[in-house]
Length: 393
Image 1: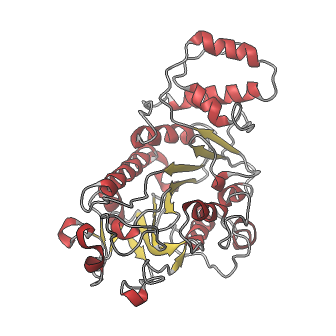
Image 2: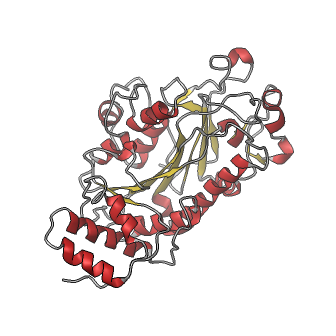
Image 3: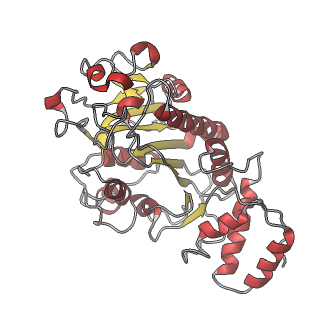
């Protein structure tokens, strides 16, 4: 049967599905179990400066290290007597005050070098620190424990964290012009009967149909956080839509002109805050079973560099937010910012393992067993205990 449809940018969906570029043919039907929890992972690629997001104004060594890019108490948003939040995080601050956001500081993956490529591989594969230790992603391994769960990758490719044998589909924002009806019909006839291309085209058309509903917008570009959030929500909240998603946000590598209250990094924080706000709005009817987690591959140096920026570091911050979250708390074993307290005398020393955070969320929100977490999802990690009480009982 010929499909009569009008899709604004189905070609990007077809490319993202892998029918053209990667040989990945997602299933035509979504498979979420009704009433299952939603989990959205925000992967902040480039190494986010955690000391700039959750600011340790109570540490006497903070301002001397940060100098020109240091944030004063009166420039920031109150969290507790020691930490304050960057002013660009207005919605995150509101969520924290409402008990729906929890922050984690001095946290890192097991990786202890400073290569973006290797750090991202470790963050995604869930290994003990070896970039080449595992060839699939920990979130895909989590998906495989649920026969009826599906993951959604937002981007031109499926990131390592979602690669593997688990069921994953993808959607990519595009600014390509809208194809006309004749082009769609020609492709439908051309691909008819093809076991790979016909299902991929059908999937792409189905996906774009979902993103056109509920007043969603065509993203102007890959940085249009609002439109991306709206489309992801439309896909996930559709009948049978995927319940687990990964959104990658680039441009956190602030080697120069990082800024303080305003500037390059403040703009990135605003973009992230906007995405969080729109996701919360779009998931409002399902907010009580929604958890959003934001992580990055490493932090930045404790001291400002000669270009008013920061270089690749180690410890950073992470966050979880949602109606399912037991929030209003900052979790940290603060190591201090004296030179002798820094990792290799230059970085915020990590005292929390990102895998402990992920285990706590996956265990309590997705109800994964400790055995699966220790042996299958994060292999050989039994010594890393899940953080407790992140999710409401």
